[in-house]
Image (tube, rainbow, N blue to C red; front, top):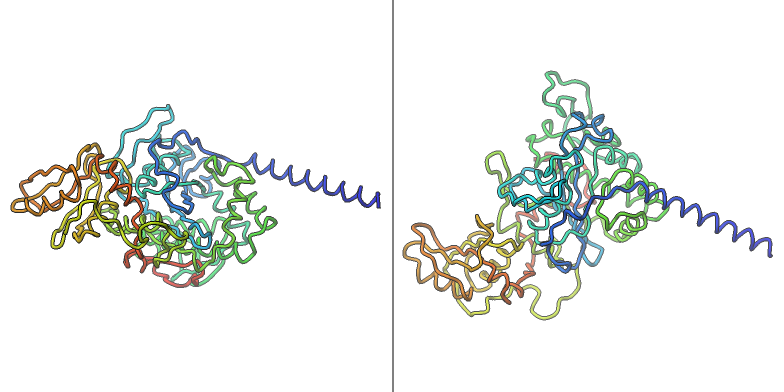
Length: 478
């Protein structure tokens, strides 16, 4: 018995030492970015009850990535793709919102490599945030700042994956099932080629991994309308198939270790995921999310010339739903709320009737989501909100109600919903509200900080994809 106990004890010690060595090895492989570049003006930790993970696909050519993506290894790092994954508080639902790289946004103040901070950049393409500082490794903190300002959601973790990391992860899972509507050739990946080149993919369903998987998600010109929006649809289908493959093999520590080893060599993460146990623990926390309850949508958009503009108020309604832990179909996935009815937006503190009055709402502050809160309160009072947007300047201290000729009486009604607001006539146009810091600091704004819609707009819901869908569904990709 003593010999048996000694042997068992020795085996436990060896097993523990082996596990300890493995964790040390994994820890040594993890790359983190400097959280000092994150803004001091962030949404509160309680902006939603769920968790938010920003996933950035980088096209950096350093570290051997130029062999997979071509280009100069010293080129500036850019974000080719990005999505915000919202894991609901019930840990049974999740939604990934893709943000088109050409979307026009305001990039807030971001830190440069020399420690100085930039000025805010309005009407700038979203993927330019990752390039602030013009370094090959990119600026994930700036992209996180931009997403937090855009959504009003606090990003709990940020993960960056490059070409090599993506290829390595698909190899570890044994490949991913994809489906193509047609044969695809080399010049579909590189339109500068004058001849079709060799066949890369045949039409129909097939398994891809490594370089072929990377080529699949990067192809833009050879499928559908050749747009980045179409490519986003294909990337969503790919991630759905990848999740399906991982789930089919089981999210157990034994299964996760090979994935963790590949991930730690492939990813750059925020310090909150900067150790093996944190990374694996986070992955294990996702094991109960059902594939059917894992959804993919794209930020509501429209073309503005060759760029992409955000469609409002649809986008604000989507972010409000995530802040309230409402699923795409309007279900509460975050537990019961106390106090006021969760399905009703709070009305303004001064009882007013806005029936028959149209008003546009502009956020004249740097407080994220303020226009959406005011719009929800106005709608509850019967006003028709014509749209929400960011004002040309974000330094307004007092709320202004601007009105065109003949609209003074209606403007007074609007101003009654914003105590302390000033009336300002303009030479043309309708009625618009430019929110100031006085509204942001008011109890009305605090009370409406999390407007809870019953569902997101149908235009958003109609484009949803579930992770359990057949990879051959919706093959047009734009």
